[in-house]
Image 1 (cartoon, rainbow, N blue to C red):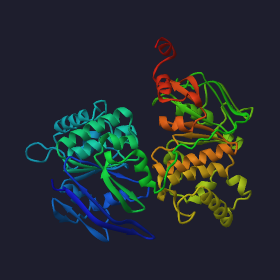
Image 2 (tube, one colour; image 1 turned 45 degrees about the vertical axis):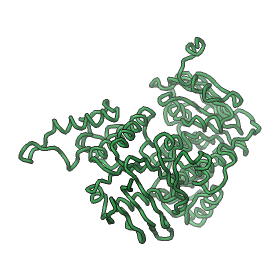
Image 3 (cartoon, one colour; image 1 turned 180 degrees about the horizontal axis):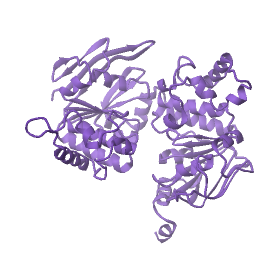
Image 4 (spheres, one colour; image 1 turned 120 degrees about the horizontal axis):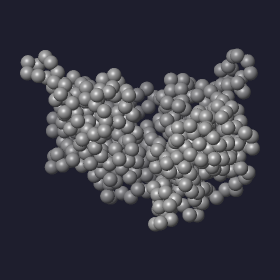
Length: 504
C-alpha cells in the first residue's frame, strides 16, 4: 500500500530555536499514527507545517505522491486534510449547526436562501454519530460547556469529509463518555480508509486507538515503530531521553501535626455535603472521585472562593470558616487550580510578575516595584523549579503546559504557603513534566509542607498519596491508607454507596 501523505526531512526554525530538525513521517489510509513527545518536542509545529500554517526552511510534503506546498489550512482542506485543534476555532455567537457548516451552508434551489432545516438535520446526524444528541443545536456555542464545544469542533471537521484528519489533544476537556464516543468515531473513520494523525499525552489513549507512533524529542525524530513493539516504559524513555526507574516518586516521609482541619462542611448548592478531613504537615493527601463528585467544589470552599453553608475550617488551629482567598493566602494556604490558564496565571504578563503576584505587598513595602529585585527573586524560582525559559520577562502564554504549572507553583512558594491544594496537578502535561511535578511535590512534603491533591488519574492518586479521601455525590464516603490503595478499592468506593458496598 502506498502512503497517502509523506513528510520528508522537514526543518523549521524560529528565532533562537530549531523546532524541527529533518523530521519525516508517512501516513497510510485507515491508519491512526500517533505523534508522541513532551511539550515543546515539535509535534504541533510539524502539524502546522503540514497544514501550511508554517513554511519549513527545508524538506518536502507529498500527497498521493504529488509534492504539495499549502499556503494555509483552507488550501490544505480543499485537498482533504483537516484538523481538530485543542484551541477552539468557532464563532461564539453562532449556534452549533451554523458553526459546523460555516461558509458551507446548504441552500435552497437558486443558491440564495440557506436551508436551515437541512442544516440542522445534518448537524443532528453528525452529533448522533458522536453520541452527543443532548447538545442544543439552537443556542450560541459560547453558552455550551467546553467539552460540548469540543465535540462541535470535531463534528465540524468530520463534516468536511477529509481524507487525512489531524487531532491535536482532542480529549483534553472531554468526559470519559465523550472520549468513548470520539474513539468509536475514529474507528469508523479508519474503516472508511481515512488516515489520522493523533497527538495526546495520555498513554492509555495511544494504546487504545493507535497503530504506529513517531516519537519526537527536542525537534528531532527519535523513532517510528508499531505501538505493539514498544512497552509503555520504552515509549516514555524515548520521549524523555532518560531511564525512568519510577514515575511516581512518593517516599515514606514523617508526618507532623495537623495543619488543616475540615469539619462537617457543606456548601449552599448541594454539591458538597457534610465533608470532614484533615491534612498534616509533610503529608500528601489525595482526593479521588468521579466527575461531579464535588472535589473541586470542596477545594473552593476550603480556599474561600465560595462560602460554606455549614461546618468549620481550621488552619493551624485558627478559625478560617468563610474567609476569602486573600485571608487564606495570608494564613499560608493556596490553591493551584485545575484550569491554570484561566484561574492561575496572567497569560500575557511576564513570568516574573506571575511569580511575585501574590507576594507584592510583602516584598515591596512602598508603591514602587524594584525591577532588579523582581528579576532576582523570580530568577531564583525559575532556576529552582527548572522552568524552561530564556529569561523571566517572557510572557507566560509562551511556556509549555508543564512550565506554566511550575510558574503557578513558584508563585505560591514565593508567597511562603505551607498548605497547598493541587487540583488536577498534571492535567494536560506530558510525562516528562509530570515526573518533575511529582518530584517537586515530594520535595515540598519533605520540607514539611502539607499537600491536598485532587486528581482524576487513578495511578497518580495511588502512586503519590499517603492517604486518600474518596468522594461520591458530594460526600466523603471513606478514607484509604497507602498500604490498602488499589484501583479496585478506590473504584468500588467511588461508584457504590456505603450500603451497596456492604451488600456486595
